[in-house]
Image (cartoon, rainbow, N blue to C red; front, side, top):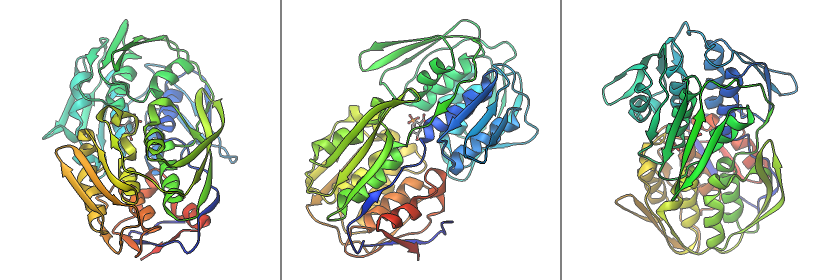
Length: 444
Ligand code: S3P
């Protein structure tokens, strides 16, 4: 179902029930396509997210010379060109709404001797790119950007790339991954230090495709050493369900009285599980069954049942492990008994929108009490549903749109969003699946 811009979610008439699968993991999907393009041979990918963001990466890898196609059974095939084998794209690379696609691709381009121009939509053109262009310049690439280090940018990749040694100053898997991807085509050891551990899908996939990588714990962070110019061999990838997308279904089940939803095969990589830990502390009834390893990543089936919740203090150290889940956690917190304080959300301000401000506005417009203190977001839950009835400005942010629509399933009055079209970037069937479970989402 194509989602129109103005959309409304009305209180569910009955409990939500059934089995609903979350779409493929966005982070893993981007990486599978990129690694497939850099490997020798044909990579087969099952469960790939076919959201707009990932389709932008597929288009970019095609523009760089890889063959990327989808079989009628839904499996994706990538015929790679080998490290160093990408060709100059003959047009601008448009990464749409996707910061991950843009930043990881900067890493790949930096160590290929080609010229490229990159842009994105209005949201992506506002986001900081210097966090990748600055470290990548040290490999010999030349980047030019708009004022403030924003897109559009141009890159002339290094002819003789030098391996990087870099301490990532912000907790960012995208920056870490850009540096590692750059290191694939540089001789010698690329050494990246991250002071706070972040999601490790790039490291896992490097191993999966045959690269040599050593990861050492260092305090709360890690030191990663990648041996340059390996021969990456094509490897099949089974993409698990995205925990960040599953989070919206989990929230809907927790908030609509009487609900019970099963969400199968959700990725449970420990670097992505901060929300589930927090929900456990809030007293949420989320049971994980059938834990297993699929395609090198831990997965499990979630069974989520509605019940009372209590407010909690979410420590700042947990932020990298649940960075995309704060908008929906804030919605959940509005229904809990007591105050939930989410600490240290500085990075949330440079996502698809300023999510601290957008989430606070979302809740305030619907009658919830919320405060922002520095980089902390504080939600005063009442133990019952907020009034609802508000209009939410999504600022081209898919997660703000979905958080608002989940809120509307459990408030007293419907919740309206000004633009639901961006939901397609990460969760194309969100409206259809929510309605199949018993939600009441429709164009306004
Ligand atoms: C991502 C990393 C996170 C996350 C984004 C996807 C990735 O960003 O917010 O949605 O795939 O590496 P940062 O770790 O850069 O903050």
